[in-house]
Image (cartoon, rainbow, N blue to C red; front, side, top):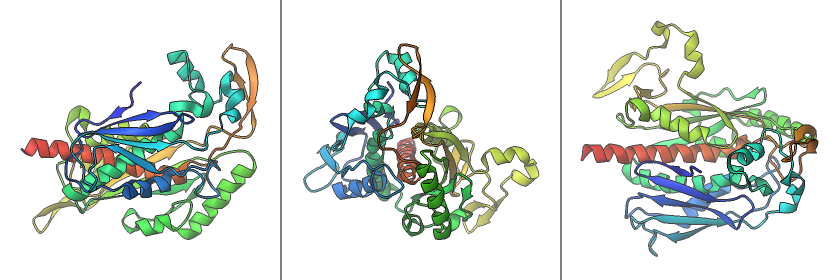
Length: 361
């Protein structure tokens, strides 16, 4: 099972949804970077369950334990960093019926097909709870980039839930705007409509999908590689590995297929001694390498697969069956996906920054 991401800044996540805990090992973190548990916990609080009426009712504190790689004075040692978050509110009995019955659009059948066994309680590694390790590691990556690229900033927000869309320009969105509402969108009036849609779906036992936008600001030119390790390719790899993520775009994305080259090309001009582009259809990446403009990303998330409605399915004995969802689940994953998207962006970027510095030396 592939649980490792990165080349120089490498993370390996581990743990199951209803096991003893979830964690991550980070290898390649530079030494003497200031790092406190509270910095990691601040990001985990944004991801944790039970944070609002829009999320699963599972109650987890999600407080990190730093097991290695950081000194008592709060500096990284350059050695592997091991982070642990213990599970404290798992209720495996809610999944008893799923032990032999495959949940539609979940990984139950495919894990069985691949391994001949699966952690049926809570979905095991297929659960979004696995992303705790990603968010914790992303906080470490962010701390490293505060030193190496202090102006760089990553910001994600919910752009659309169902048919409710937030029409805000990426250059106007702030962290404060996003965190001011429980949906994590960039406009309070739109947030209210999104909340209403999510609660309506929840009350019907159904779920909703949507899109998340992400912007990376103050990006130096020259990050990324040609051919197979294009920056957008490694970003796509990271983002599409997030549970429930089914689509990924950079810049103009699929919309570029409707344009002529004369309309899509980003014309260059000089701003002092800096090369700029008058438009940003490329989303800050050309030829797989950053051009210094903002990186613009969009991700599509499917509706939560667990719904409280009866559905057709089969059992592991290949018998027809019906199943109605049980347990505690988000009716829409979008609000909690925002910090996960940011974490994956930080992880990809820190790896490419370290690779670029290795090239320069």
